[in-house]
Amino acid sequence: MDHLHPPQQLLHLISISTIYKSLHLLQQQLLNIEGLDSSINLNDAIITPNFSTIVRLSQQYGEEAGVGGNVTWFSGSIPLIPGVQDYDLSLWAAAQNITGGIEIKNIFFHAPPAINQLYNPIAYAELGGAPAVGSYGLGYGTTGYLMVPTSLTIQTAQAIEMQNTVIGSNYTFEIINNKLRIFPVPDYGNIYSFLSFQYIKVDDRINDSIQQTNGNKVTNESNASYSNPVYTQINSIGRQWIFEYTLALSKEMLGYVRGKYSTIPIPGDAVTLNQQDLLSSATESKNALIERLRTYFNETSNQSLLERRAAESEARVKEINYSPMTIYIG
Image 1: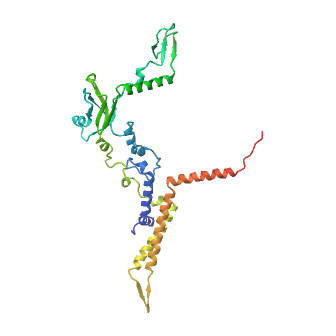
Image 2: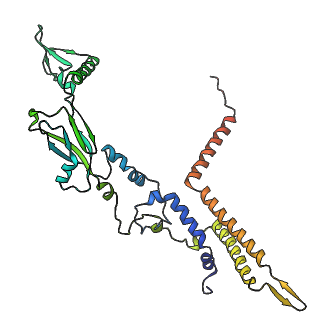
């Protein structure tokens, strides 16, 4: 290393500081840089927090609700067979050459809406008491209109739904492990009817969640493009830490050298070398410097800086409250 300049020698000796710095930056920014081009130099970049990774990590919740995610919903249908109440949708999937099974997300088998079974809340009436007919249009010239209260419409719809449930055939279904049972039992009036449903392929949950990057994207700590800083770009705070850590390393190296000979003979006596003192001092200094570096990085994290700014704002408000407020009398 004699051919290197002294600052470069120091940089080689304290590479641990750059490792801690890179780890600190990765802890702060990994969620923001994951998926970036790994060739980008992040040392000179100002990174703005973003929701890209957060949204990607939460897409599965939208997937379950049918409003997002990376798993495709498919549509299917089966014919209703008169007198058959149970249908095995797993057998249907096998007949469609779907491997890995399916998961049913929605069944379109519902009772007719109650609103379709009552008159329109806006009733058109001819002058002179002619029968009223339902209409939403307002293009009847000089005729009058009778607006039925919305509360009455809601009560009527609820009454129709309750009546259909109690005395009519209640349209419903239950599904357990892709075994579908529908109510009421289809009759011969449903001979040309089909039951529609939506489903996902179980294998898509895993297959569609993996995105190959061919090694050109940031996927973990090992390929994030943080590099060792150039010594000339390190400020006085960093250089002071380098000097102190270099001194500790020098003590340690000198202690190992002196440990090769426990005593040195001199005329009429022998000198005992201080290997243990040097090693103890070097170890204590190195541990203290690393802990100081770790503490400094923690204190300059985004969370700590925001907490400090909030504390300063609160203290500033308290200080302003101590100032007398001038009362103006007009």
